[in-house]
Length: 467
Ligand SMILES: [Cu+2]
Image (tube, rainbow, N blue to C red; front, side, top):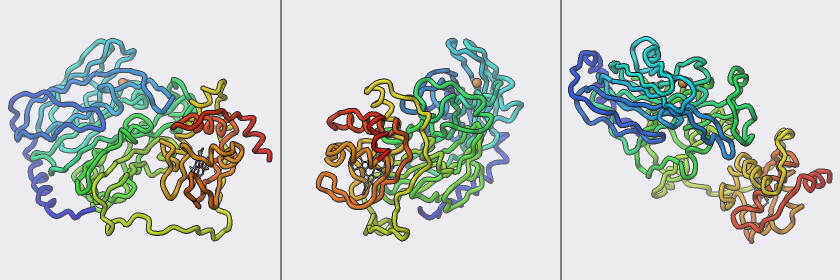
């Protein structure tokens, strides 16, 4: 967090200019630069309004929504969310909507930045293999959602047809060091979360608002590891945050940060020192913060099961020098067990998960179990976290006795143990996995990260469970 001195002047200036925007002169002609998420086009440097040509192509394509799970996305520009469009107040936008000839259904576009019937939808109905053109004047500054509005509207949006258009105020926004594009969406599939293969859209679940996936930027993990947002200590970061829905509102939060400034609902109202901001379905917010310390900061929808169980989790990796005054890091750790045992049981689940037909399939399915249940503690590379979570990669404990290892995953574990000569004294919860899931995840672990291989069967697990 950081103070806001120097901001007030800019804001007053922008507000004062609003009334003359509609009458501003337009000169010249330009082609808009569009970007794929999480990139944002560069700020607009020109000091005048212009005629701006925007060309957006709809593509229907199969992509990954989660590891091993595919979905037929309908996209603006090939990505979910669609290409980021950046214009300036007063611009006259000539909008070209193209529907690729390989697509199966017609589409159109409703931009919330448009003043006019349907936000453009009534002028842009475009069958496959066609292009439509309409134009509009950007009268109001702000960050706006655009989406497809072809019937059944809910289905087009549920398939990923949404994105953001930023209408910069005259004079632009104050400069920042980094700008990123993050947009949430909820998805509804025939199978449950993690069920592999190509998953068709489920109208029944969409009607019940019973989402299988809630994600940032179109898929589980799109903003983690290699896709994580980047920043350096001391930089000011601005996130353009949208929510395509179709159903759920987002309680947008960055773990370990406080938003210095939020442009509430992406309008003129500024709020400061905000922990969580609401981003409605079909709405947006602009949030800004200075990153003061290094580390990984986790972006979530704070409706928290969506984050840890349905995919609404991203990362910002901040590099640079520590500041032990702002944040000390762990100074001490001891066991505190006022109620005695601390092994928590989670409700049983996974009973009707699909069964692996071969050892290889078991490993593949185990990867999904690992990524949904173990990765938060033992990490994607199995290395664990020093001092807290032991490694499951090249762990002598794990390799030592398979029954003992099965017991750990079945029942959880607390109290001291030694892995590769390092002692741990922490708590692993019982995760309530089925025999099949325990067998799959351990087979995956044993065949990953240089571990020696092997196969654990559901029968072996069932035997241990009886004990
Ligand atoms: Cu559509």
